Length: 346
Image (cartoon, rainbow, N blue to C red; front, top):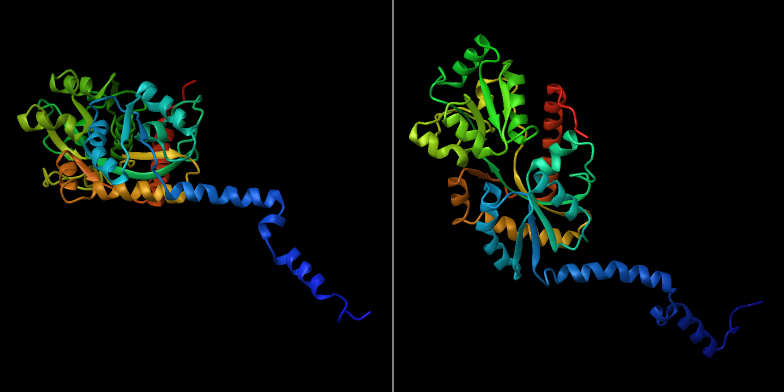
């Protein structure tokens, strides 16, 4: 049978309409549902944000990270065109807050502002954490790296970090350093320092940074590792002696003070940061919008110097760069904890 002339004009029109005509009318409903499901989030992302954005903070009011976020928050709100609603939830070192945000819809309207304590170190220190700080969150940007210090009471017979190490080696167990608690970032940084320097220094955990600092100022213990804002007034008054910066860079407020890594080969402080996260699987345009507005504020010519003067290095990185920083933090903290023999608690 020859096909030429087999279909009349009307039939040919019907065939064309069947295959190429009003596609949406003839498309299977399941396919339409998939397409609409893919398009809807994109449309939502383009309109983001359409309502206020809530940020849960794992730091108590008045803490360094809280102060920074409340300083830059109004400017971020202005850029987004919607207010940031800031809510402090520091219970259990931020673990409860992190768990809550991990379970929220990944629409960008519920964010988490936190530190490595709730996102990295907790997985090595507790068996009962019900989230993964890397897999269950979308990194948006790391705001800053707080400048970290090693300070001693003036009675300690050491004017340099090398002299402190030599003294500690001659007097094992005689020195003690205070931190905000077992498993805190500065406890683990202290263990990393001890491992690299080969010294025996007693760790004394406190229920807060300020209590530990005050006990060093009062002479109850000899040294502490702490963020610069916590000890800066005491350094200025001569009540504490600054021996080293713990990070990878010297800080301009005292450029002649070396980093610990310059004096102790092999010492590297695990990356410390204050950063913003959302739940996992956030839409890329939403992440980019949030990142763009936050980075713009953090690096603004009238904001960056203020943050640095407070005792911070501004990071303001991309989501991908923040994820890589998280991975590095996890590797270094995990190694320190393993070598120190610190076991997770039930």
